[in-house]
Figure (cartoon, one colour):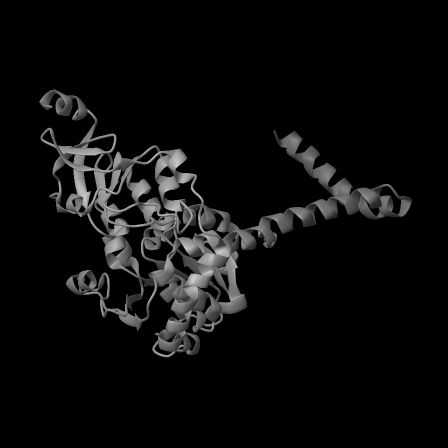
Length: 381
C-alpha cells in the first residue's frame, strides 16, 4: 500500500489556497498553486477569475456540474488546461492555507496519505443532458415572485439608491470584471475619446478600467476583489449590502479610511451598479464584459436570477452592449483629416481652373510670382 501511495504522490504538487468564494480566492491565488473551493455548479464568472490566476488544479468539495445548468464554469477550467477534481467532500475544506498536497487522478494526498477521493473531471463528463430552459425558468418563478414582494418594487422605483454627482447628461460606461471586459474597452477606444463617458467599474472591473486608462468616476462592489491602487483612484465608492446585512469589502474600505455609500439589495455588485445607473438620469448605459444570454442568466443560479432580471428591467432600453456600440459607431473626422481634404479640394479646383483659358489668365500672375521667387532663391545660392 505504501508503494502505491508513493507512486500516486508523484502527481501534481502545490500549495493550496482555500475559500468558499472562488472570486475572493483568486485575489490571493498564485500561479502554480492549487485552488480549493466549495461550489455546486461552478459559474462562468467564478471560473474565469480562477483561470486568470493560473492554478495547476482546482479541487471542489461539491460537484462542479450537477446537470441543473450548462457547464460554463467547468468547461472554462478544462479549456485552460487546469485539472478539475470534483465532489471531494467537505473534509477537503479543512486543509490549511499554504499546505502542500499532491493531486493524482481523483485522489488528494498529504505526506503520501490519501485524505480525500473525488472524481477527476474530463471533457466527456461535461457532455451531459441539462434541463431545458423552460423547466429551469419555471423553477425560478417562485424566486422572482419573492424578490418582487421584497426588493423588486423598491429597485424599480429607485428607493434608497445613491445618486451620482457630476453625471449630467453623459453616457455611462459600466466595466465589469469579466474576461471580455478588456477587449470590449479596446473596441470602444474611438467611441470613448469622443463620448467621454462617465465610468462605473464593478468589483475587479476597477483594475480592468485602470489598465484601459479610464478614469474611475465611481466604483461599485467588493473592495476585496480589487487592488489598492484602484480603490485609491476611485472618485466615489458604493458598497452593496445584502439581505443578510453583510457588506462585502466594507471592512477594507474602513481600514483604508475611504468614504463610501451603501445600497441595500440582493444579487451581485453588477446588479447594484445597474440599478444605480438606471436611476442616474444617464442617456445610455454601455456595458463592457456583461453577457445577456439565456445560458449566462441560468448559470448565475436560482437566487441571482431575480435580481439580475429586475436590475436590467430598471435600465430598460438604455442598456447597450459594447459590441453593439462598436459595430454601429461612426467616428467624426479628425481635424487634420479635414485640413487635408480641404487642401486636396483646393488643388483640384486649381488644376481645373488652369485647364481653362479664363482660369489660366486668372492664375498666371500667381504662378509667375512663385516662379520668380524660385529663380531668385536659386540665384542667391
